[in-house]
Each structure stands twice: as C-alpha cells, then as structure tokens.
Length: 160
Length: 160
Image (cartoon, rainbow over all chains, first blue to last red):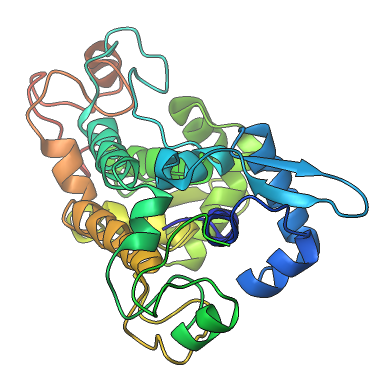
C-alpha cells in the first residue's frame, strides 16, 4: 500500500533510531537499509525538509534523527513523503456536496482516516522496543555484532 | 491516501458506470470527471490493461466498462493503478525473518490488509446505489439533466 519511497523512508528512520546521536554516513545507511544510495539521498532530503532528520555534508557528515524516536510516529515519516489526508470537502469542488461527501469520496476518506489512526498511534520507539524475535531490518546476530542490543532481548533506541 | 492517479481512475470508472453500454468519448469523460484530458488518456490505458474498461479509437470511439459495475470493486480500480499488496515476507530478504515479519513490516502489512478489506468489499454499483442526497461526481440537477436518475431518488448504473 505504501509507495516504495515511503518504505525506504521508514527503513532509514528505523535504522537511524537504532544508531542514535552520531551522524551516520549515507553510504552506511544505504548498506544497512538496502536502499540504493542515490535514492536514499533523495529520501533523506525529504525527511530533512520535514524536520525528521538533521544532516551535515562533507567529511564526518551524515544524518541522525532530529528528535527522540518516541516522538516520531510512522505517520510522521509517511507524511514526509506523501501525506495521508482525510477528504474534508468534495475534491471536484461541487458546491452542493460541500462537506457532505458523496458515497465514493466518503469511502476514500474513511480508509484514509483508518490509515492515519493505525500509523499515527505507533512511534519508532514502539516499533523498536516491541518484544519480538524479529527485529526491524536485521537479524539478531547482526544487531549484536553492531552492538545494538541489550542481552539479545530488547533494542534500546538511541543506544550506541 | 490514494494517489492522484487512483482518484482519477475511480472518477472515470464511476462516470462510465453511470453512462452504461455506449462508448463514451474521452473528452466527454474528461469534462465530467474534471480530469485533464492527456492524464485521463493514460489512466484509461491502465484501466484497459487491467481489463476494467474496453475502448475503441477513432470516430465514434471511446470507452465503456468491461463488465457490470456490480462486478467491479473499488479495490479492482485502485489495483489497476498501484496494487495494494499485503507483505507476505521480509521486503529486505532477511532469511531469519522469513514470513515472520518484524514489528515495522507487520504494521505496514496490517494497514494494507485493512485497506484491501475496506475497498475490496465495495463495488461501483454499491457506490452508485447508496441512498444519499450526494451523488458521486455531480449534483442532483446535473444528473437529471443528463437523464441519469430515476425520479431523483436512486441512480441506476447502466441506465441510459
């Protein structure tokens, strides 16, 4: 349902949530998220424009999250790429419809509101801290080798 | 939430459901759906490729639905433009994840399934026949002037 770009944005944000306060070079992020480097660079520009990441160019540069993962929802990330918006008034501008949507647009609106509710209620921290044997974007062994887990149990965002 | 292209496709399909078995010229369809003509032509090509409309070029040509509106769901139309697919296995190809999705992709999958359920259960006929004072794509007066309503009550797809 999400566009490829939104999927890549979510991967990038989750990985930056793993890696914490250090600026992560874009090529390293591309490797871990399996996103083509040039594509990722464009995604990061959009995330930066939406104030979700901060970056610095040049030697020692890279990106990190702009705020704590507990303050960023999945919807924030998706909205940075392609906003999910309810339909508040007739998209065709039919005056007699006004805010009383027709059955077609009422259903599109309803689906948008469900998606907003689903993704708006989940933060990156929720995704990372959910007790599960399957961790976002990598297997357990890889996480440990990167020093990103605690006793192989839970992943602490912003750790390391 | 839907792309502009999907929105336009839904409009086109709804209008073709109104107008029935006659081939409707693309410029006429563009006028009623308020979709730019060139854009609409591309949308119709995608709908044709998905076997949702049939068309004929040249004088007297145009498009009509490929089957009865009760046999076409909103999801069929959306899928013709940009398929909504559940996530059956890890998009990064991580072997240890397999079909046991991580918390990130489980949530994306869950939202996709909700959208599939919402749009898959509604046919174009449902949208057109829903008793409502607000009819898809046009106001009551315009429908009557086009001979597309029965006593201003319900719209019968394929009527006229």
